[in-house]
Length: 68
Image (cartoon, rainbow, N blue to C red; front, side, top):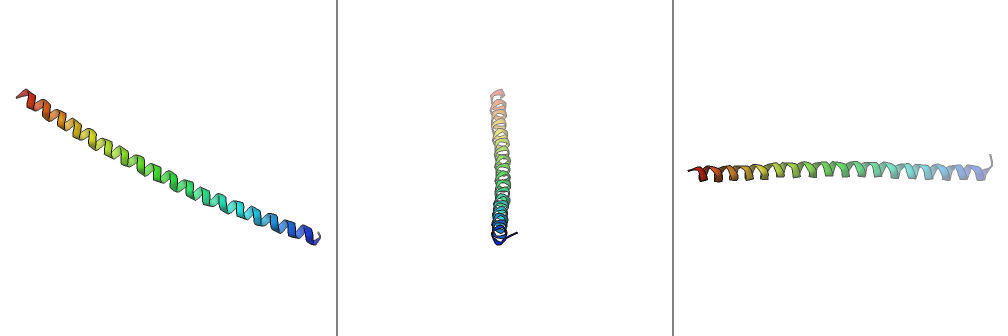
């Protein structure tokens, strides 16, 4: 193996490491992104339950007042 081949292998190895590190960073970024969406969806569900509960309470109160 001559010097040129060794240099080429070193360059290839460095590029593979760079690509792998970028993929690892992307995976972390994507995982955080999914976690953020999950938190957002849970917040929306919680708020919707709250507003539906308020609407049902108001409708029940209005119905009870109408029966008097």
